[in-house]
Length: 430
Image (cartoon, rainbow, N blue to C red):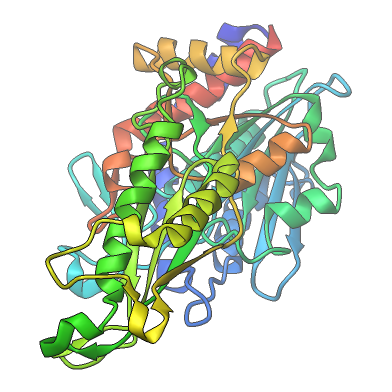
């Protein structure tokens, strides 16, 4: 089918149908929050609404859509929807529309996060940008394909997934689908991961390694500071020294401009904890935690810490009695560095057919194309790429409200997203 015919047959986003489904899935969002062990999402609540929307056009009802509900954990299903094409092996897919959300505290919001409210062009609720808005959008695309039945060479597949917001828990969502081979045939064409924002191709993400620096000093009364090794001061100076060395050894990469990264690789503290004590006690230990966005840096960071430990007497101090060695007691302050599991970044293939059709569709629909990259981590994308999928990423919510309080997206952006999807399908027909 020619490009113009595909667009004419499928048409534009049906507002009433889209908002009807979005209202229903947002209404479940209180039970979709992903923050175990307290909050375990129940993605099958969303699966039910999506299936209800698509069943009239399914093979069960004499329609073309093949619907498969795949569950690895009770109540936490994935949904694979297929619109068959006429040419064997020719395929494209929309994946990444996850049915879980990050947490929301209604007391902090200006409106109810767990029910859809509409303010002009704004669609307001938790999940509108990330990612229930995309669930409803792609479901509406598949519904329109099932309803209008365009004759396509390509098979179009949509995969609605569980458990994207907590990739530390495995065996529930897309990782299990890949392991079971249920997505293998998607390797035959471009895979569009629909889970970013701002209507532009997202062509790169950063890696992330969580780290902890445990600082050991000596607890003592604050009025006798000369008899203490202040773990807080040692931690502050150590982090400063580590960061200075990191940014010298890992300057901005030349390809950061090519991929449009807003920031270079970073190493920074994000949390600080200590056992507690009185205001008149100098802490004897503390732990500083943070993340670093370069996988190759782990060995280098350990070298920094080893060198600081060996030469701790040369580290800057804080005032005339601040010290990190007590010779009379044969005590030295020390640092211990540990890492949690690393999350790898990804660079999309800028020469692939998928990237080119996404850019062309974006330019035609949005009016311009400006690919960008983020230093946030999307580990599931890298895993798919490593498995041989041609992964491209896009999204039609707003980065400004991503995981934020008072989250919203724009209906006009979702309309453009729908048109981009139709343009992608049409281009791949040619």
